[in-house]
Length: 470
Image 1 (cartoon, rainbow, N blue to C red):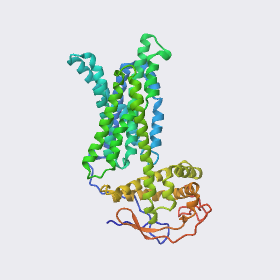
Image 2: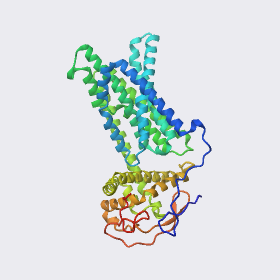
Image 3: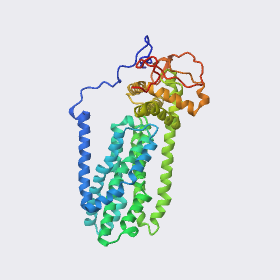
Image 4: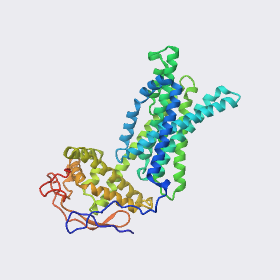
């Protein structure tokens, strides 16, 4: 069992805070393993894909059609991104992951799909005895397979190379949903631009136009279609992330199962137009809407499960003195989190609110990490990762603790009366394996009902009780 330095305090004679972020010791990286090289190659790949897909779409729609399609296709994007960020409120992943996912869907996945689908349909039409069936076969079989594979590649890359930010079902669903939103954005530009060109040639405009019909079906009725398909793949990866490293079969089968379900639902949706006059409405009401409701419930349930994990796992760090007694309760409540951010922002501005948001993210990651450790699913870097998260919490404690103390008292004033004030009292503890077992507990502090005083830390004067001052 590994042991760790004592709980850092501000006491002159006590132990001090860690000097820097703990890291795994690694050998010298080769040139292709350097972060700058990998980021540069990825950005270059996405940029090149974006330029090629831009040229292809513009060639098919014309400049005017492209601009009209772009203006209409962008409308659902902010709503979908906001919805997925809302689902990810408990432990939001970094924006760079979402930017990569959206860019991959809009550029790389869309390029793969357009080129592969066009080639496959052309090959079928020129090599089979029934060329008229090439489009139907392409829409119902080839497109679902190619497109879901192309979108799943982004989820796989985040799962493999951003594993610390990919810890469960919510992360998988959000990554998949943002990737599919990017893909649908580019596809909608193509469809809407092509429809606009058709209307220009036929001289039809207004509500009876092909553009209006395409906009209604793709943007109004089913903006969630592509995200819904790919979220099934993301959930499979999320469930694989919850499995232990030794459960290799499960970690492979779960993503594959999600991918096959995504392909199946996608094929059913694309084939709905061939099922007769009311085939589209039947598939929409009997499959798409129930699937949308079920997956939404599942992701929200997973998010509530993360909050419950925070409330159940973080008290171990309270016992060792790393957290105050009010924090696990406040961090396990979305309302209390919002109050803490608002309180910090009111007293310290956007920088303080951002620090509290980061504190929430690190604390949630710590709770999820400890849950995996207790269940034997932690990786080899568990100890280093645990210390990294505690280090990040320690750096933000002066701002976060008063904010969460206020939020806890506002949400649950009754239980808060029994929580001791930790403003000037610290516990000293050593870590033993998974979680921190207390060696010395702070003595009892008389309950108080008034506001918790802001602590005067060494970076401020003895009379300055505002921790938000820079």
